[in-house]
Length: 293
Image 1 (cartoon, one colour):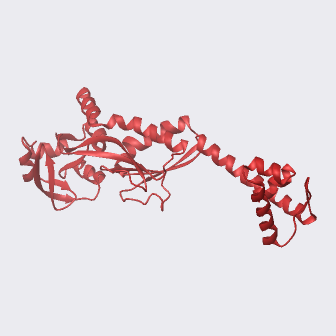
Image 2: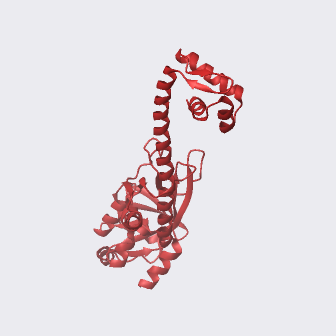
Image 3: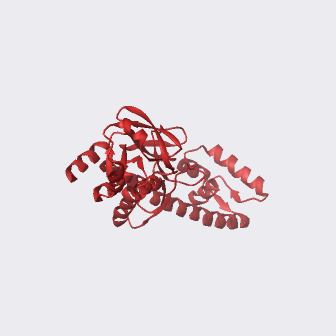
């Protein structure tokens, strides 16, 4: 179709071949195959020029319409890649909603209002391609694969927290080993916590399946909980929770995306996310908590 339209536009096989960067023989063969496939003669040939047959004129009108639509779609796609427009679908753990993702979304859309954000908060590991996810934030270290690219956003720490009410009843443990004898909130009935370089087996009063539920149980005074510091930060600053031990294991967070070449809208959102995430690094959080105290 493209070759046929070029021949009509340029007037000869020679001129079309030159503009398309292929041989005159290739042009001739392609036109002959096209005519054979559709069963009609499209062009009258002479040594100096070509002329459309009646059928060729109708076919050319259809080709011109189709090619115009294709060119329009290609222009639109280029603009979507070059400008901040379109939709960005992001998935992240529930616990990063308030401290990280929502503030980033608010700041991002003030500057890029033409970009629509679909924010999905859940704990399950989604299939980036099947679920049409542009960007996924996951806890843990993840390496790039042929299927997706990974980039570490920040590394923070787990902390052991408890409510003032709980500490008033049970006291604040003086050393890591004492945690094993106190009511705790954990992900399973018997769980090991990395704490100050030691492994402590705790017996949980309540078993929960998310960090947010563990935080809420700690707020209720049910037990001590081991959770990532960003999830507890607002409650610690407000005095609703106290950090009992601050060295309960490191935890990295990683950004993943399926595309090798990021569209501008996704790249811009990722940079906003990375800038905000730096505030949640282990070093930044430690200094900010010390300053607040």
